[in-house]
Amino acid sequence: MPAIWSLDAPAPGQALSPAAVSALLDCASAPPSAARLLSAIDAVVPVEYLSLVNFRRDTPELVEGSSRHAHGRDVVAECFAIYRRSYWRADSVMRLADRVARRPSREVAVLHCRADELPVAGWRNDIYKRERLTERFTLLHAPTPGAVQAIHLYRDERQGLFRADEIDRLLGLAPLLRQAHQAALNAECVAVDREAQIAQSRQRLARLVPTLSPREAEVVARIAHGLSADGIAAELDIAPSTVVTLRKRAYAKLAEAGLPADRLRLARWLA
Image (cartoon, rainbow, N blue to C red; front, side, top):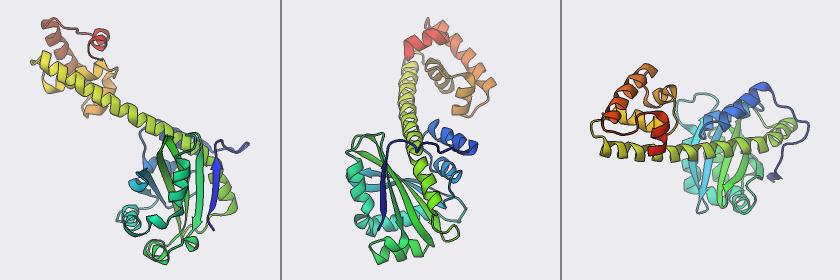
């Protein structure tokens, strides 16, 4: 039968390679990405597919998937559509997700299930046999009370079943992966909040200084919220030198209107 673990701290004495540490930091420093998570896991134990799943009103929803090799089609999305249509109610991960929703956010639950342990033959045939999958290794955590996220890892026949030492490495990685994913979700929330604040600042600028061009307003709004010229250039997909030119023009128009025309006063006025 499937094996279940509950963890809240990494196993003592387990060392990660520099590549794994770097990949975890990449995961933690940006909004959630299935590809980045897969890269972090692949530095410890190779897996073929990863899917990020969110549970809303006790229903699984695919957030994003990624694969180690190019397959010419979106295997994760195809398989999840079959699963969502026919088999999710038979999945023991649903009961585990209900338990995780009531547990502290620092905990991560882990479920390991081989293809031959799946309770429904159609599920095995339609997904696992079709895609030559051998097993699934799932990490579940609740970033906020009641909001459960799952990271599903899949091996295929080329990789074979997880060895005992590979399972131990994944169990050691699980709490660190939860922390990295939690940080990524927090980064996403911050990014969403910042975008909303920038939009409000841009609207205020358009109302108070109609002589600003849309690009100039975009630049000024981001300056007010602490972005550098390089950061603004990356967000707007323009050269840093163009940002400097737009900033100079915008400052001149703001000064002409008797409004703040430097970074510090813009932050006080708009942010």
